[in-house]
Length: 406
Image (cartoon, rainbow, N blue to C red; front, side, top):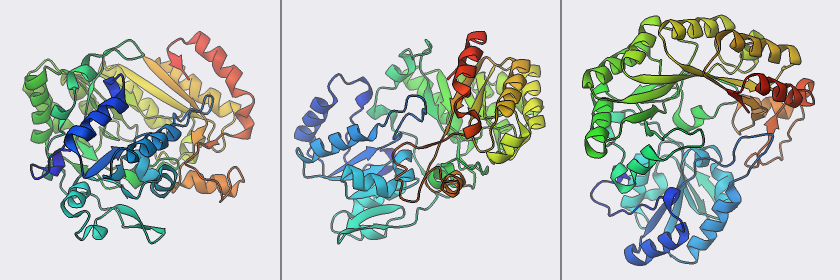
């Protein structure tokens, strides 16, 4: 919303804490009478192969209800929409959407819709003459050209203080860079943010954190960067600047084992980081290769060793059931993490198959899915070698390790 600028009058409806979201929307429609309504679709399902839950029918019901109460044009965006743009336009029965980084494209749409040259906007997907048309998305070259997120339209203190299911209070998300240079075979980040890493200036990032503290008293943050520890030099400078704020801030981030760095890990702790998430996904060299992770078991071990030396608490992930997975590779991954005793281990069984990924191509080649399958509906890659065995194994494993969850 901040990117729309003062030229456009905006309202936001945050469903998170609304007891009756539709009543709130109806009140805003009556009072504000918008010409354009932007809806963000983040997740289409829960990515859980054991108990899959498809969220999108609820989205369709809402879009249908919305169109009975307003003549405003509806435009979709968000990471979930960027992955399934054409599928969601069809399923949600909406005519406009923006793929990828949408701040400047949404502003351009607001500037020109409906009578201007809006059909040339980067990332735009729209329905015209009975067919869908799509413009290539364009990554933003200068992230500092964007204003800070417009938290004032929402209730940041509630997100900060509300207890989550894990029994800990919430955090405020912050982003210091976009793009990911890794080429994981199942991942959708390249379609959403691209593979070229672009950073915000360190001053802008720490200035946003300081402003959140001064305006709302917010102290807990989570960096949503895909890889916090790359580029390493930038991450070091950012940690030094956070430390120099000398504010009672706590934060966490996601690091990639491809870039182990002792100096950075010490700086992360000194800057107030309470915990890091390690995107290891496996402890088997075979599976790391098959998943396209681009790092080795040795690098995973080096990362965990350096985190221990830096006295940094860390969580790990095991993504089980991918191409080539066997009971032996599962046990190899489990044995590795048992040696290093993470604070928490998140276990995932089966890998959600997304369009435009190498995993989707492999699944089609193996007959696990067909070319006709609409991947908006959840489909999972699960190796036949572990499909019947792994559930009982994990139940026994989580009894032994109460801090391991699936």
